[in-house]
Length: 270
Image (cartoon, rainbow, N blue to C red; front, side):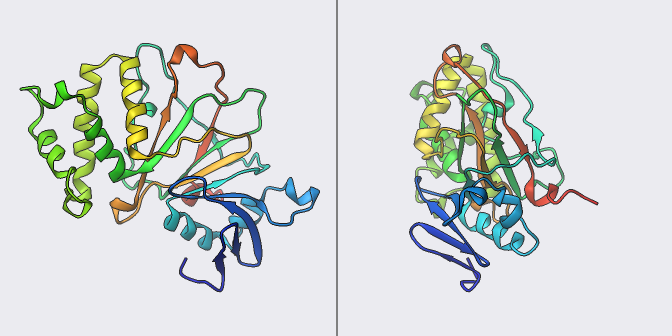
């Protein structure tokens, strides 16, 4: 953070403005905010995301935190704010949905949203499907590493994939320009869609999750995940996907997620 007098961190707390929050770092990237520190029973059940983190006084500092961390997870947020909308699209047994591929939100928009927030509201059914989140470059490199040998050595493999296989095996400062990553990723995705059936593709993407070191921790009720979806420096951005950690036929429950583009959609326009 750039203003240490406003935002300070210790190993277990984060102070924004004059409010201190309990935090942890259970993963290699990102920060988890659990609650307001030393909250009483009433304030522990508050909507601290809107009442504090996205308040006019803290909003820019909080958005800067997301930009710095790449991923900020807010747990125990008691909110049904009207700006959230349902996550659309369902996965079928025979075909992956678009959401199951790594992507940035807003691909068809002139300007991608800065931040994507995905949330599991309180409901009767839990969430048995993960949301994998990882840095863009790590995802592309992992997709290349995970390619089966028979596809890597196929006479018909795309020359750009072959070149990318070499480039992404080098140090990150020798990778192709980030502006080329979408094209490389798109070619790999089309190859997998053409050569693998649905469940083989899902198993392959789970391998990609592992190689990319993705955040795939189980969802908890009242949890929001805010990730950096767009930045002038594309190498700093993150991608996400709907990740089935086991075959679709074994999915027992699947609570519904909601989402929004927080920087653009909150506060709601007046």
